[in-house]
Length: 106
Image (cartoon, rainbow, N blue to C red; front, side, top):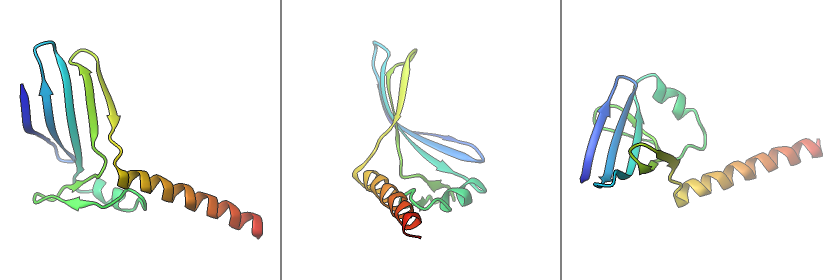
């Protein structure tokens, strides 16, 4: 069974789920997380989270989707790292190394 899009909406979060489940109870879902008022301000302060988009209903969509695979009884979740997020990791490492070098020079 294919799930083209299913939203779970709360005051502080919104989950957008797409994917499939088969008769053997195997699953593969991609979950997009968006945060509501209050939490979105904290996320915007994170320097390397990536580009943040605001949905029409005011939630801030995070650029890091979660992939859930396995079975209905034994699901496994992991972050889906895109090339842009890998670049974010490189930026974090470069800045950390730069700060350590600056400390050594002082």
